[in-house]
Amino acid sequence: MKHIIIFMLFFFLFSFSKAATVDTILIYSKSMHKNVKCVVIKPDIYNNNKQFPVVYLLHGYSGNYADWVLKALDLLHTVDENKFLVVCPDGAYGSWYFDSPVDTTMKYETNVAIEIPEYIDAHYKTIAARKARAIAGLSMGGHGALYLAIRHENIFGAVGSMSGGVDIRPFPDNWDIKKVLGDYATHPGNWNNNTVINMVDTLHNGALKIIFDCGVDDFFLQVNRSLHQKLLDKKIDHDYTERPGAHNWEYWNNAVKYQFLFFREYFIKNNVLSD
Image 1: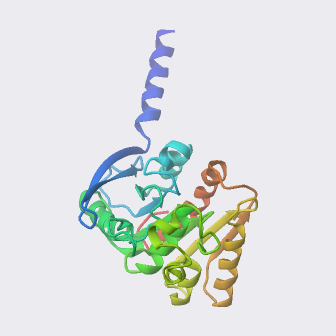
Image 2: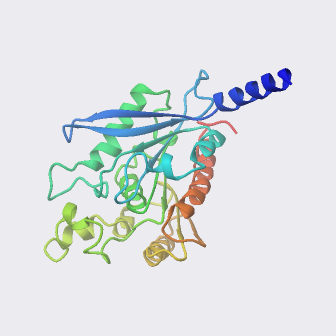
């Protein structure tokens, strides 16, 4: 009996010593003059003498930096399986990851696309190159990921969106968007110039590896279908999937696994991750 207990204790310690670890850190934003919280998830092999690619993973409206760790219950295991770092920045309650043209205190494009990657590359064992960086997100974060990747192709090589609000114009009174862009009726240019579906016009095929998906019971389904069709019309290669599901964590906990597989294959192809 004693030997069985010792074996079980050893098995327990071994099982939980080899697992992804989570750092919660503060990163000072020079553009916003404040500290921004951020989660960094390191795979179980992080302590090996090597450098890692990074996926930046954005939360949705009314969420925060801790959402993915607390609500996507399989995420740590998925990070271990894929063997890259995952960074979850805080995008505030409803920043939509813009540098707001109407509120100069909100500089979340600058913070997430420039300041945070610079900090992560300086303080973690990363491969500091666009071919080793991807960005993804859900809902507001899905729009944010595509928005930032298109505007900062020199930083990110691959991008993903889950249930993303990829055209914000049909929702002029929702989710505090007018607080960061101004009222749609008064500032239509801010909305037209900063919605992802219009930004596709600046894309060149092959510039970004793109994956996005949406649940068939999601209120963002139609705008995602429209983005898919526009990318087809412009002959921009991408992966698009519709699955059963709604705008909830059950859907995103599943969707992120497919997106991570997509990023893993991208990193392997670019020789920044071993198979």
